[in-house]
Structure formats: C-alpha cells, structure tokens
Image 1 (cartoon, rainbow, N blue to C red):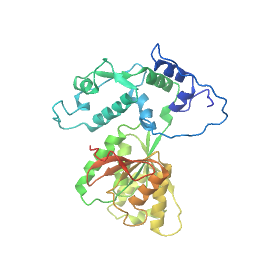
Image 2: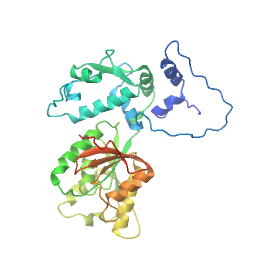
Image 3: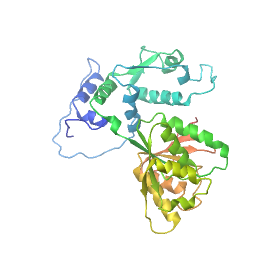
Image 4: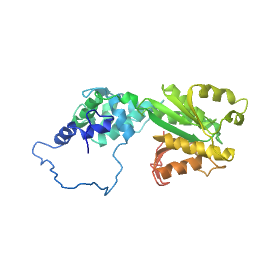
Length: 325
C-alpha cells in the first residue's frame, strides 16, 4: 500500500501509523506480535469475505461518538423488550435501530459497555453508557483530521407506485425512516420521482436534511402524471438536482434506463417490492435484478409480509428473512 499525507476517508486510516498501534493494542502484553516478511511484488486476491460491519456502518461511528472518549448513554427505549419478553409500546424504532447498530460494533470489537461485564441489554435497561474500544477510538481520533461531512452517501430507491393494500404505506414510511436513521449524513436521494415509493422516499430524505438527485426518464415526464399527482412531482423536482435522460425507444425503455441509472449512482439501494415479477418493462423487479447482478448493497422492504431484509449481492437469496420492524 502507498500511504498518503492526509487521509481522504476513514479507510485511509488503515494505511497510516495508527493502524500499527491498533494491532498492538489488540494483543495482550505477553502475546506474540505478528511478523510478516516477503519479497512479493504483486498482491493477488485469494479469498473475499464480507466484513463484520459494512462501510456505511463504520462511517456512522464518528457521528455517534464525536470524540474517542465519548460515552453514549442508552435508556430502556433502546431495548423495549424486558427480560420476560414483554414489549413496551410505543416502540422508538430509531433507538432500536441504533441499538442493533451498536451490537454490530460490539461484535466487531469496536464498542463495549462502560461498566466491565455488563451486557448491552442491561446497559439499556438501567440507562448506562457504552464507549469505544481502543482500536475504534483511534479511528474516531483520525476523523478529527478528515472532513467526512463532505462525503455524501447516495441512497437509491426503486419501488411500486401503488400497493394492493394502501394501508401499508405508513408502515413502509416507518421502515425506511428507521433505516435512514442509522446511515451517516449527509444523504442524497437518487430517485426518478415517480409516485408511490419514490416520492415517499424523497420526502423522507428531505425530512432528514438531505438532498435529491432526480433521474428523469425523458424531458416530457410531466405527461405521465395525473392532474392530482403533478403538484407533488413539481414540488419535489424544484428541490432536486435534475438529470434528464435521452433514451431511444419507447417510454418503457426510458423507465428501465432511469431505473438502471439510479442503481449506477447509488451506494445503497432500497427496494419497496412485493417480490413479484415486473408487470411491464422497467418495473421494480427489473431494477432489483440489475442491482443484484451489479453487486450493490440492497435493502428489501416487503410491504405485503411487512419484513425488512438485506438481499445478498450476486444472488437472489434473502439474508435474515425473518427480520421485522
């Protein structure tokens, strides 16, 4: 690796001397340190493994812990289910999402309870604090030398314009809102601004102080909206950075091109999808298939069974299909 004088992202910290300190601190006083010598001139990938936490989860760390010695106080709303399995309503879904994120940090060795030996469940139930481990503290200290605030996370959306059960829309909104709560700001919505999932998502991004990049299938897109739906489209488009495609062929060809363009521009794609094949060309299923082939991280919000899952890259298998909000 070639080191840089100034890190551009949090990942560049691993190319700097503090990483050696991190490795050293992960070993106890009497443990043997790893020594590696080689005359190799090239590096070949032998095996590729999924990290314990994603890049986006790691980017969130400095925002939750602004300093290396910061202590984050939990409360019972982070663990709404008590030791007997009773759930206290209403559930604060944003706090529950943060609690799940903290458990991922803990499993990766980045976070611990401030009181030694205390389980995270009891930390929340008794309003105690959690803190960074030594290694993650080094990463957060490096954050002070960077400007991660200038790095926008681009979140794309694909989804249905209408649902068979319209009463599911509030649940969809809550599900998206909970997922956005654990993503590092600033956020940029990548959307075609179609009615339904796209416009709902754009509004939720604006609600969190984000911005919109709209990919419009063709210049005369307003003719595809009914008189009742046109005002909201115009309102959102006026707040967006517009990218207008010029795709030869039919309107459906243009819709497909816009959906694929949304995927290409996104770091993460959210799909509000019932799991069925697309009715017409350029439907949600077509965009999901392209995203899976491309290997983009894909969050599946299924409005019929009301589940939220991560779709694996390069396959259609669903991870954690029982996850519920």
